[in-house]
Image (cartoon, rainbow, N blue to C red):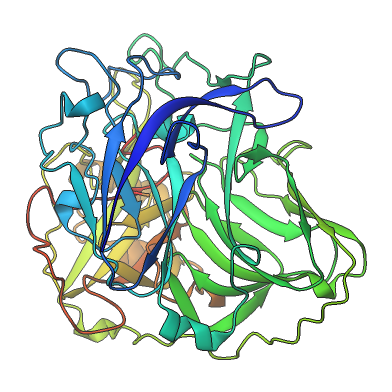
Length: 506
Ligand code: C2O
């Protein structure tokens, strides 16, 4: 068992040599060592971790936030509410970082569903990469933009060592990637005027920044040997999708895991599309390179896919400089990785229809993402049973691709089908909000898109294509064993599922 405290501080971080230090919110073991991303937490399978997250944030936020949307606001209006969610973790609801379980400095005030100071992470799930980030109601977006995020790795040596993948701090690294804009004084720039300032003075649905930051540095470089490296790439952006590729032909990604789970076989790809909050576990073999450097690049438009094309600043992420060495890397990536049982959709106990649409009210309020016509504050609608399997048909009636994230459960995407005559269907849905009554079967008849090989495994985030219905099988149990949870998953405050672009936790 491991017990520790992690603190949240306001500190200065140097993102680029030409930029003055930036005030940020960061997690750390001490004020001196607090950084963005926060310390990478390494857990061993079955060894529980207990973390007390201690809020030492100042009284005032460093970024503009909007009190007119549903937001965690302390009664005395003092202090910054925060709560930490371990994204991808399979843990008790009291430690899941529910958005209304927030607390302010010294736990002086807390949200309605707050129950405990010390969070308990069981680490009983399969090995893989997770990340922790703020999840406070209405403030998730600004708290993460200010810097409250970090990587978390669960290792299971007797399962992973035989794979002989690159390991050790030098050859197995998280790459935490996000976009930010900076003012010339170094501070993080965020437009403080909302889309519709008369109603919501500061609210904007998405944030995009000009600079690309990897592991806390803008456009950094890394010196690497002519050998294989494992990178656990986490897209920690608010709304930016990345489609990664290397500037040098022939260098690709050996995709070994998606989100928190290994694939059964590695998949070789040249372009890697990663939505906000998605994780790609990849091996890159620099011995394949003939030149002495390569640039990790991005060509995903923003918003994705209907927005602006990338520009000079956000099309490049980082440079890898290859040091000449004579070390020969003979280890091969195994052709079989880890095989988890695949779900049998015919044994699903429930079929649900989940429609995402952006709703504009009659007074032309800014758009929020509504799920099944209900805002985030509405009472829980989905009450799956522990250990059960369910089919979810997720209908994306918006213009943008939305990364759907489910807490507690993992799922496998089955297929995506285009909706024909979508306006007609949408008109019915906005009134009746019932996919069966609105005859989804009549509209889900367009193109079918196959799930790409590297996304066929168990995931906790999936990209919901706009204008498509995506079918997923969700399992509310562990994927590597039939054991049930060692905690009461039905306890309050329960779990969330949501899109990981600023909505609905803003
Ligand atoms: Cu990455 Cu509900 O969270």
